[in-house]
Image (cartoon, rainbow, N blue to C red; front, side):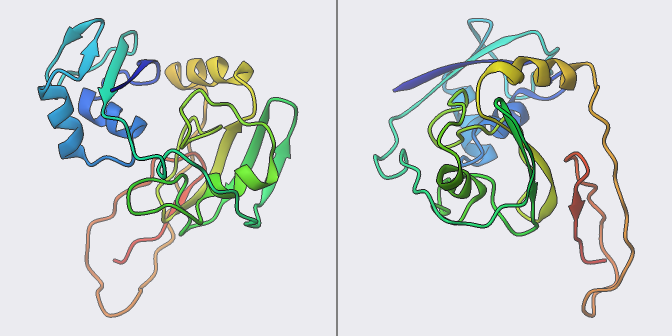
Length: 200
């Protein structure tokens, strides 16, 4: 079994299963909920319910079975990246729509992380082997800026900024018609300065 301890900073008023699913994006929500029910997720050292609302100050520990060696390896790929900023601690990347952020079950290659592993020698390993440097994410079909940590130095500041809502989120709605379907539900993106295309 692999054990990992994380802080719930930035997770205020978010359900436990949703918060964990943001950390383990290669697992489905039902798998996360089963982990919680099986006692593999502890909140402040105690078992909890899937629907627990976090206050952002908890310490969460989760355990999951050892993954296959193939899944625990990142293959560097020469993928062109739109680098907006780089310094000794961080990178700002403009992720295009259609790019998955990091490898997981069913998606091993051609992700942002595969490209980062090729272009940069040092990335923070705080979030594990499969997500070097990744501290937040955008959905596959959402474009926008992702901050990548090269060292652990900026991570605590970012988490605190998220907790007190110092990051400004701009949501842009671009109406249009794609194909024949003209009705549907609009799901607003949550990523900073992000654009998600939806059929209306």
